[in-house]
Length: 443
Image (cartoon, rainbow, N blue to C red):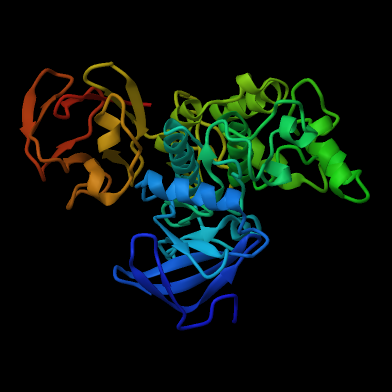
């Protein structure tokens, strides 16, 4: 594959490092991405097409590089690369193979789980929240700019060269089907920013969990030619949520759009309520859109209360505080809800509810009052549900932390639980997890 830069071409970054083009990785709407060798190893170089290498885009890239935004969830520009003439580009890390594009998920060519999907949603929300907290609006949140690991839900945000300081009116507005209605309509004073990002993020979350667009119901099916004028009507002038409780004019067609009807039925009410709010009130009033913190709390709660069907083994999302078991989405059997571990954080007294399914783990963020991010990696495990080595069906909670726990049974007897040891599960068992308090509550 050939491109604008020849293999072996030498360029120099704005910091004085020499880089050598070694091959082409791909191309997109704004430019090409090449593999290059650098003093720090192989990197990716995005090189803009002449039509996109504008002074405005150059200013945006130079600003992003100067911010030195260090976050492993973003392929952030970390060096500006000027070229001959008016050409330019920027260096970023190469996307690891384990991260896959969302189109493959929507085509159902990826194997994944509800746990991974909810984790991916949570990671996306926290990634964009981290960006917004630094005064940066992404402006083009869509299915094409984010990749995820279908095994564990890790995410990687790419194409970050459209992000600008909040309030900047220059540059891109976004992808039409993800754009906020006021941008689609071209309302006076409407510019891409964090408020419009919230709409795009909610669309992306809906598509991730439902495999369907929130505004594509009967109204879309009735359109003979989905041209620009039709898209502006669907997404801007007359957007109607497919599950709007007060307007069924755009409800899903029961034959053509059965998938979204099925997925909506198994998503917990905690999430459905937020989707309804965002795509009814939020469509009309941008200030009423669901915030990242609301999505974060809801997704964390749902992620921590996913259970396995005892009959078929499939994972099921459950309503976090519900005590009523519903039917498995896959086989129809009534779910068996395992005990809950209720963790109360040390200072604020925030409750975290965790279903003790077979693979249940307590992570560092569970015992903190206000975690900076939710990390479900192996290196953050505080406690883990384990089965007794010689007594099948008997489970305990193993101490994976570096601190000795103090545990108290419902009969008042106490015991210490050193690191590496476990305490048998019993209803009413209380554990001091090094500051946070945990109680086992039977279903």
